[in-house]
Length: 193
Image (cartoon, rainbow, N blue to C red; front, side, top):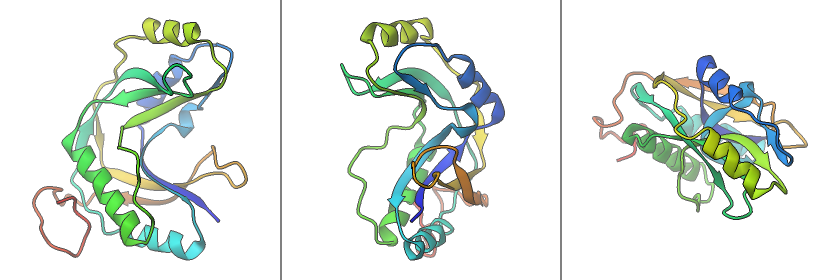
């Protein structure tokens, strides 16, 4: 069963910038820059038939290119942080695109995502880290941001069999066709309306 998710692949220059802020501290397992991405929808471990349906419904998602900017750093997990991330500045087009991916997942028969969408790029998985080390890293890299970049497609990734993690393989790419996320009310594709 493939473990699939849809995402925005990051430009090389953004991944390189994110890779340069790594810091050695115990309990941090850093993501390789080539595996960094912005997840739109995690589909999970699904069988081949469901994977084909997800891929087909994603093919019906239409969007126009838009800009996003990676900005700020933070953690998930409160006082016991488990993930170090780089955030993404709020962007209506990104939210609409993500909602279209949620609709595609539901159309394929997957259950709704229960977590709110918090666009981010995972930098490291954390286990047993000292709060002080994380706080120092966040303080040292405060105000982190990249130049805005143009998003012109999204991709369907699969995770490595057996581990569910990187390296990730691109199963399909979906270039934007220039159709505006905001203009078309037709039902023949998945717009977030």
